[in-house]
Length: 231
Image (tube, rainbow, N blue to C red):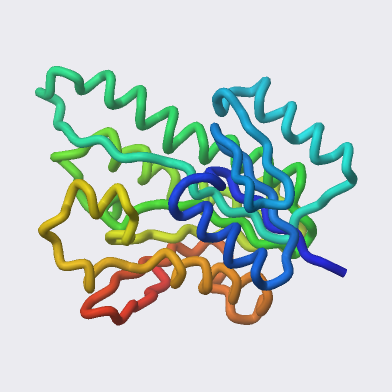
């Protein structure tokens, strides 16, 4: 029987790569995002990650009697600035909407649609393990995401029995946006999106390879070699 992967943020750089990789490996792919992913087997377009939109998507997927074996949240964004920045509060609201609310929405979707023993993955950030004074809103929302990952790993967190809740914590992903705004950087020290998709596929197909439930998994690339560390 074919397996199902659902990606929130399935039309972004990382999300689209996850959809592509799983589809090439004969999984059924489902994307939820603000724009359609034509490569996915099912693509749901939402206006926002508010309650009405999320519940509507859950109902549509339930109507097709679909349960998912792997859920990945690849949605999110970045904003810089400290407390003195003129647009600080604007950035706080933006980061809550893009990073934190998407994580909460993912948790609800996972609780409703994930199969028992399934894999649930949120995208955190290595930077949020420490102080992020130059990007406070980003760091705070990613740190909160790490908290959600651990809560969902608890017995009463809401995910189905036997599920594994994990966080992936990149240092720098090799995305078109990062290349545009950091064109002078050493791209050999950035993690290719295909490597992330491959690792998620490994955890999906080989449950024994998964880190311990509730783990935050930091990964960093140096000279084209990526190291994965369970925290």
